[in-house]
Amino acid sequence: MEFDPTDSYKEKYLSPPIGDGWFTFESFDINKGFEKENPFNLAFAMDKSQVEEKLGKSVSKNQEDLVQAYQKDNHIIIIFYKNKWKGIETIRIRKINKFDAKNLNLK
Image (cartoon, rainbow, N blue to C red; front, side, top):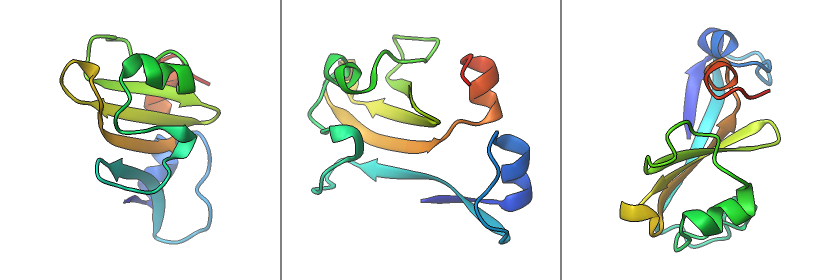
């Protein structure tokens, strides 16, 4: 889990933080080895084509990169693939931020 100072969060994100504390929840990672059900029915054994069946086409500019971003509603799911997209190492989930909106043409 990753937290960001609330003032920094307000500068980076399109949506306001929930609550008014000093820190705001920003993202969370699920690493290979997690044995419970993953969000969006993702499995660590999936390759890129299987992930895209669940999440749609990657919104990343470089489709050859082993780190790919996917948009699902107002969230970005970042998948860190193993070599040659044969499995997943890490799943990161967070809200869309201003960088995503500008550089990946997301809303």
